[in-house]
Length: 260
Figure (cartoon, helix red, strand yellow):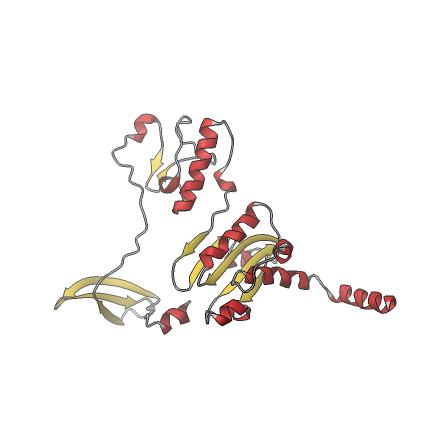
C-alpha cells in the first residue's frame, strides 16, 4: 500500500507530531516535529487539510439519565443483547458500538428488532463484521489479524496468496495486493485482502466465517475464471496441499506403486 500510494505522488511523513497549522500568503501550512528528533522542524503546504478525528456520539440533551440509561463519552452503555441499563430500551449503531459502519449498524438493528419484539436472545458479539478502507487498492478485513496470529503461540496460521499469481489481476495490470487468510487447523478465523475490489471479495469470507466455513470449503467452491476472487480458492488449495505431509506423500507413493 505504501509503495502504491508513493508511486501516485503521495508523500508520507511518519513518526511526527503536529505542532501547529496556519495560513501564509493564501496557503495552508502544517508545521510538524519529528518524534525521534525534537530539533527537526519542518512544514508542508496545501490547499486543504483533512482531519481524521473519528466520530463522537451526539447524546447531550437527551436526558438519558432521567430514563435510567447509562452513557459515557464513548456512547450509550449496552449489554451483549443491546439492552441499555433500562432493560426496556435498546440501542444500536454508532451510538453504542466500536464498529462505526453503516453495515454494522444495520446488523445490530436487526438484533434489536428480534430481541425486543420477538423475544429472541441474539448477541452482538456473535456478529462477523467486515470493514473496508476505500483506497486504491482497497483494504478489506474481517476477524482475526496478523497481530492475533503473532499472539496465538502458533495456534493460528496464515495462508498468503499474492495477486501477482492471479490471472485476472495480471491481465488487468492490478497485481499490487494480496489475500491473507488466518486459520485454526483449516477453520477460517480472519482475512485481510488488499486488492482493487477487496470490498467485493471480503463478503465471501465473512459468510464463510458466519457459518463455520473452512479453507477446504473455499477450495471446493467453484469460482468463475478469470476473477480476482479466485485468490480465495487458491488459498484453500494451498491449505489442502499443506495437508500432504511427507509421511502422507510417502504412503501415497507406495500405494500408487502397488496399484500399477
